[in-house]
Length: 121
Image 1: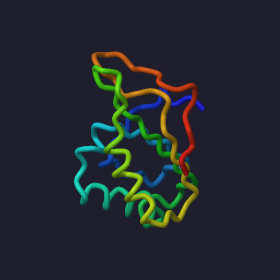
Image 2: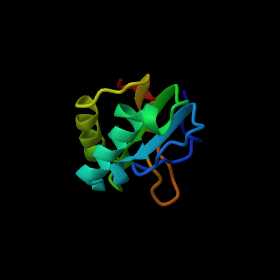
Image 3: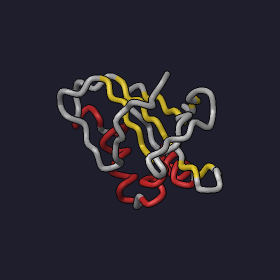
Image 4: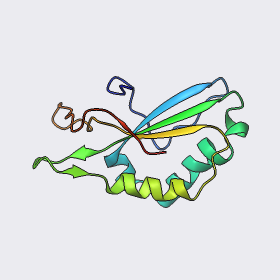
């Protein structure tokens, strides 16, 4: 799978009623600064109560995109926070979570730091 051309999502996005198969790309920087309330709302809307918000939604793919610092160090503290929350919820629809092989954009450059995305869940 190649998620490099997918539109960047947001922890604050909500599904539409017409949504069927969604891929959300969430970047490290936003996840690292997300509040507990934002995380809780995200998992409630997309996982626990998704049938109420998007009754036609059949599958959800979440792509977590890390950051790469100026020293070429990979940062995933926000991703770790997200995964901790994810383990505590029960998704009512098929959900795949991937770690992207591309970093977020830094100075208009995206870094490929591994060969392919890795499926986490």
